[in-house]
Image (cartoon, rainbow, N blue to C red; front, side, top):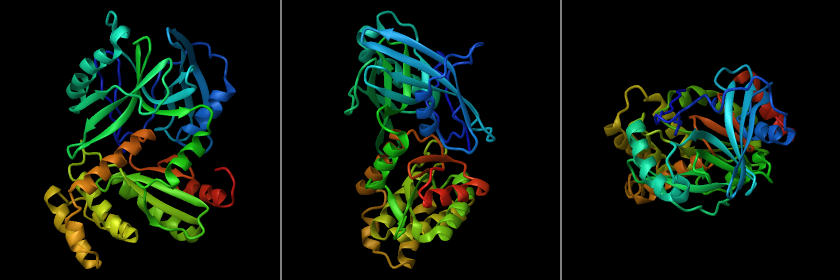
Length: 376
């Protein structure tokens, strides 16, 4: 896995792509603030799960705005995994009762910026993203149904190179801070919230049915990602071991900025899954086997040969691959990853629990507990 953040010269880490470390937020204070058990419980269930993790609030600052108050919270996690160990920032909108998880940054001190936040962000963010991350994005000043309070939600419309997808974001009403990440309603359990969002979502390609499934694994991955290939044998072993008890699905999350043929492979995956979801795993394994020699020009012929060799409808595939149906679908899948705060490939949601870097010594026992109806 990789870690990638950008610096906007104002201390604003705007985006993390193919990131395996969620460390961030404010530096720990010399004296720890009062530990809020409700916040810690929420963070434990919203953050990626890892065995024997401990969480400590190291900063908790309440800020007043004309629209109400928000809290800047930094939580330190300690566990055996060095990528997950560290400090992560969270923002609680105390007006809308929403907790934002993601990248928290400080905006430049511009006079009267808070009086016209829409105009300021529309002029500042696109250029900052383009210079620092070579990303083409525009600010869409609408909430998308998300409640507004001390934080004002908006969207970033990002050009994937094959269309566009949306990333949720918010700015504090005082114009001082920005959050790029995912909002969670404080009144709902984050695990149950994600499970419900995914279990009937049409963007999930269910490739392993699990006829009596007690556990659902939804995998966000990229066919060009070496870490996805490296973790797949463990997932495949899990599906075989628990067979009927597990339903497995995949959501394309092609990291187009670092993986040049990933979106094309994602398009092929959508088109194949649209015909026969059971063929998605063999297609995935074929792309994985060819990662070293694959390039952009080879994706179409490889996928076309796969379709012909597996008895799928070649004409239907040709009308889907890199055409509007699959382009729109893959961009919506990327958008779903943004809504869930997925910042790494592969990322798994197991009955709503977010999992990074599963290891055989604890992943299989965790699945066993979930199959038995227990918490992980």
